[in-house]
Length: 224
Ligand SMILES: [Ca+2]
Ligand SMILES: [Ca+2]
Ligand SMILES: [Ca+2]
Image (cartoon, rainbow, N blue to C red; front, side, top):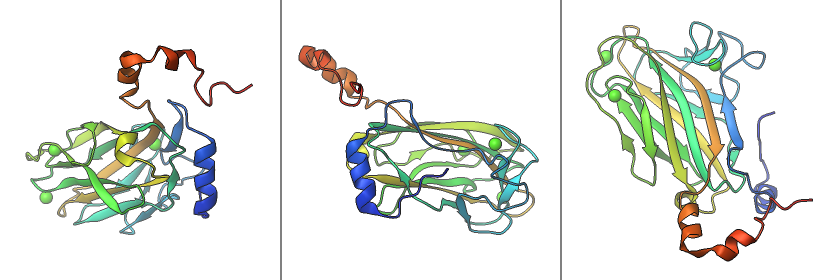
């Protein structure tokens, strides 16, 4: 089921031939059975610590989530690059929870993406999980680093990345990094979804003048 491209030349040709329509899901993982079993490592992700496992203790979607144990500098990294399929923009959403209090400098120290040139930090939410997001165009979205007293249930994040930022990249990989001290300062991650969204500038282009653009059927929608 999972997208896997081991031959870059073939992947590039596929991108040129087919463009993901807005709304198309490019990637989704909610750590659910039958693919995932509580207590095991997640199938699609490399984890930096053996105590990062699929868990049925809590979930924001379905019955399982990924349990990320307390400790410094944990990482959860997608094993395989995902095909961008010519998506005109990305919306990335996920749910993240902390299971007890965390302090300044602890929490989600990096949600990162790699468009082929190495990982870059998209969002940072330390000192208690706030949730939220925004549009990423190269400057990390940095949420409050105020101390987070107590457990925070699942909070939702949503980040938009326009194609004008990632250009002609053909794939992406995701990574989540957490940091905390001991004492059950654990985290949970669930419901990771990447969807193709319209390029924000599309409306502007139409407004500026494109009666003739409107009259022409869009490539990919005129299939018969
Ligand atoms: Ca789930
Ligand atoms: Ca925070
Ligand atoms: Ca701490």
